[in-house]
Image (tube, rainbow, N blue to C red; front, top):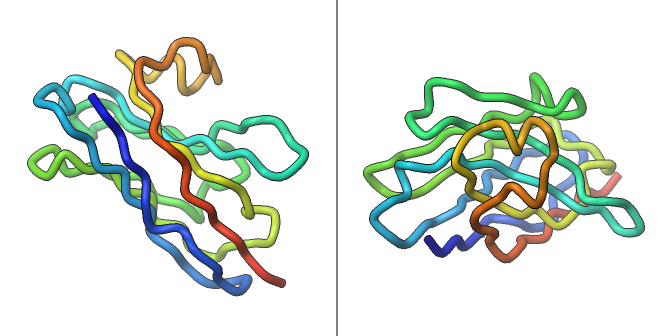
Length: 125
């Protein structure tokens, strides 16, 4: 599975962006998917994850009630709708795939099977 994140950009605080993660390969629907981010000078941070069928989702406390993760297995694409953006959301966002939700929730980066290249999100104050 190859992953490609897109949709980043520059937005003012309070605005919205939708990130996409397009996957190639037939086995996309077999994987849990999720997002991480890395802000300048900070460690990589877990953001959100979704189970292979989309029935279970999980969010970091910092984005809960503002971000929504979803997926369309027919299109081999995962999404992250980001609303009420804050300057502290500024980071490079990466999508990843794993066998289960466990590695995402546990921030077990080494448990990811695939990583995509990041997309930059910048939120101005």
